[in-house]
Length: 388
Image 1 (cartoon, rainbow, N blue to C red):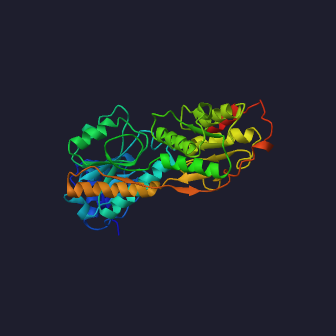
Image 2: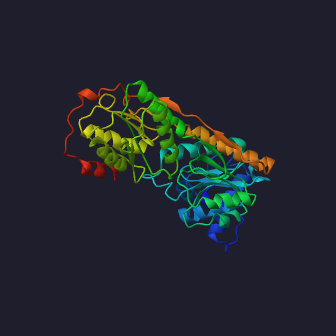
Image 3: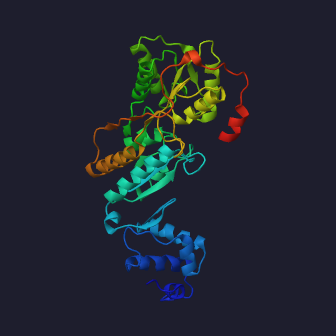
């Protein structure tokens, strides 16, 4: 049973001892006495503050001190966990790196969150402590490398911040692995060949009778989008369909609004597409909205296939897409990092993962002859309000 706050802080404390020092000592003692056991999460900062009759700021400072001592780990959204003794001895801490936008609820992508969860679970199982680290674009990771508590890095976000620093760390002998690599970096990583899903998307459309097949994605030099376009073009060549530049729409951003306006331009063509392959589901949301506003029935008048299966909320999923195994890729990347820590320098290794095709409502046979006349009116502002 936890002592009362007065007893816990007051016993054996010099009257001149700062409250912050007393709180840290008390929590350290509870861990040593087994009040808080290994792997268990401590009470919330609010509850600890009430128990110890101090402020949450003081408690937060004490927990940071204990984390620096290697007794606990603090994880945003999960709390403070007591580390087993084995995790505190001869094992470097692992920095889980992400872009500075990561914890912004309105921006953080579900695929990144699932990747992070897979990495956390694998590191928990292996007995390694870790710390999530935000990496703003101007931040120098070499500063972090000098911290005694961090000796290896796992990048778990698909928004790269100064990626050359990751390469520099690796060249300096620091173990580095990227989960779900989407840029052309010479690093150990888990990855997906993004040509394959778009190639399969075109093959699916061709089997359904489509021959006016469009592609919507970012510019070719941005992340996965170049590979996705290559897969799309390979599918056209395989089917004997000529590439038509008017059927390739480039988005400025990976979001629904960009997909919406890109699709409106495609639907205004003299011979509009009957099927659209989309590099990301976030863009596909706008593609679908633009089609619906023109009176087109998805899967009938216009077929759409996306990629990742992480954007749509549960209960609203209707998009035919390719599912990205984000959790598995995060877990595998964490295990690869542990292997590099244990075995030391080794040749770079990458593990490729496959996607799975998810057939829903937006892909169907070509019925281009009964498409309704397109309206010249649009509802761009309505979508803009909903998306932004």
